[in-house]
Amino acid sequence: MADAQMQCVGRDRIAVEEVKAAKDALLASVAFCKSPRMSRLLDYLVEQAIADCPRDTSEYAIGIAVFDRDPRCYSPGEDPVVRVQVGRLRTKLKSYYCAAGRLASIEIEVPLGCYMPQFRRRVATSCTSVPASAFSICPFKCVSQFGQWEHFALGLHEELTHLLYKNLGRRIILEPSGEREPRRQADDSLGHRLEGSVHVDAERIRASVRLIEVQTGCVAWSEQFDGAAYMAITYQEAMASSICSALQNFLDTPHEGRPCLRL
Image 1 (tube, rainbow, N blue to C red):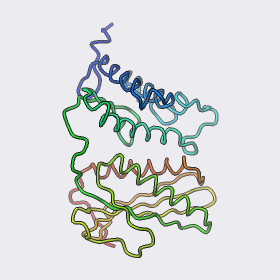
Image 2 (image 1 turned 180 degrees about the vertical axis):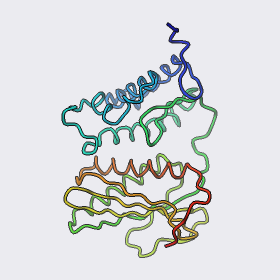
Image 3 (image 1 turned 135 degrees about the vertical axis):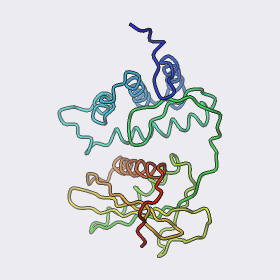
Image 4 (image 1 turned 90 degrees about the horizontal axis):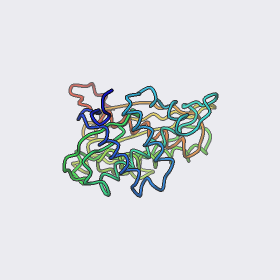
């Protein structure tokens, strides 16, 4: 049987013992030592990645193994605990490597769109690098006959603004609420504008989100996100996390020659 010290993981082929040391350093940090739930999540995800068990990093598997959900009735679609907590974990990891762990040689990250951690060797970089371009966020419109869902739309907008600021590394400009027309070309660095609306029926809430190229007025990206019709903050955070993940995947991917719908 091969010595565990000789096992390597990740694209950079990092020794398992180095990965475990990086994990232990994280768990001993202030951000994690006072958060047993977050520590348990990090430990579980890293161990599954080391063991190369992607099946055990599904949302369902994490909910049962880490958050003690009952497998007989647990439904990830109705209970967003994994999406919410992994979103918080990503934020904690990013903050750690920009502060207490800025000199760490190994970085653990959980890419948006999946729950399997990745490990990489770090190079000396600044956490205050100049962003590629800024974009603005318009207040989300609520399309519902029930006025209380205005609060959900407002909360979703707030959660999404927070996640985009924490994860995208771009300058965020908030469009004032109540303005009939969003600003145009007021800032040469402003590349895109994010707009959204919230639709609600008896069982489902749907957020329709689109990204507009400011200079051309074209729709560069558009998606819809569905969730159970509950108003709790947890559901706002889960939907915001899904939107942030999809948007970052779009922004990180080259799209030369893609069609553009002009409004």
